[in-house]
Amino acid sequence: MKQQQTVLITGAGRGIGFAMAQTFAKEGYDLILNYRKAQGKSGANLKRFMESDLAQGVNVTLAQADMSETKEIENMVKTLKKEGIERIDHLVLNAAQAPFKNITEMTRSDWKLLLSSNLIGNVACVTEVASMMTAGGTICAISSLGSRVVLPKYPLGIMKSALENLVGYLDVELYERNIRVNGICAGVVNTDMAPFLKELWPEMFERYENSSRRWLVEPEEVANIASFLISDRSSALRGTTLLADLGMTLTP
Ligand SMILES: NC(=O)c1ccc[n+]([C@@H]2O[C@H](COP(=O)([O-])OP(=O)(O)OC[C@H]3O[C@@H](n4cnc5c(N)ncnc54)[C@H](OP(=O)(O)O)[C@@H]3O)[C@@H](O)[C@H]2O)c1
Image 1 (cartoon, helix red, strand yellow):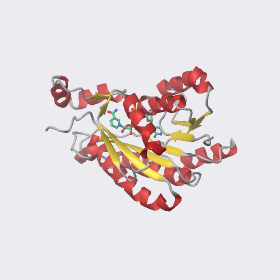
Image 2 (image 1 turned 45 degrees about the vertical axis):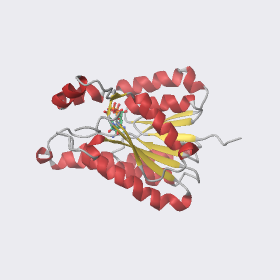
Image 3 (image 1 turned 180 degrees about the vertical axis):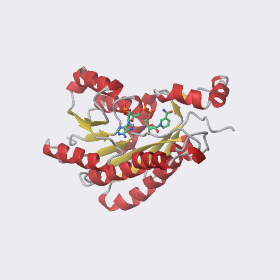
Image 4 (image 1 turned 60 degrees about the vertical axis):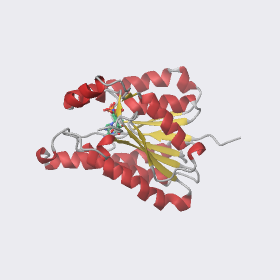
């Protein structure tokens, strides 16, 4: 029988992260669900999830840490080890936060937040967690279209380009340990972010809302692709990022 496997998802309290928690639980993975704060929607979702039937069939551990703070990430992993978790099989880098501003309006502290949350924090998390992985482990990074097209007031796109590049570098670095690293570049996803993005990019939303093509990706659809990437079924994929935008970028 195959060994029971554990997935750590960052920013697992809402949106795509929460959809992945539900999907992976259904598939029988043990879960480590990272969240930033106990209050608010993420706290409430995770509390409900812990009490749900879905969470009863697998081991679920909640792990608090602000992913922009390397010290908190190190402490999170120390706490997990103290709780008896010695091995993590899969890591999903999902958490993201950013200022939504033009590049020329970004302050030093905006850049600090952008870099610490989306690049330095993710690398710190990989460094801590990869040391707990064994052969067959995977890392999956969640990226967005800002990595490949210029979106107004979306400096996060620069970090997503870096993240997709990091996927390749990490895969090469971790190859000898047989840890695979891949990413998903999702189009516009139907999470709390969608109404916010509609306000940010009204013309783009209007154009797609008036087209016949379905263009809003559901969080569960991203979770299904992540499920594939962390499984052996995707064994031929290494250091690549899959585009999941419902064909939105096929035409200008
Ligand atoms: N929605 C989209 O259209 C879209 C498209 C492509 C890619 N993505 C990417 O998919 C991922 C998830 O997006 P989403 O739409 O599900 O976002 P969301 O609904 O805004 O949720 C973001 C999650 O990340 C957590 N988070 C943010 N900063 C954190 C930090 N410093 N430490 C720990 N957790 C933190 C949030 O926790 P709190 O609840 O505490 O805030 C929340 O759980 C992100 O990487 C995003 O860039 C999203």
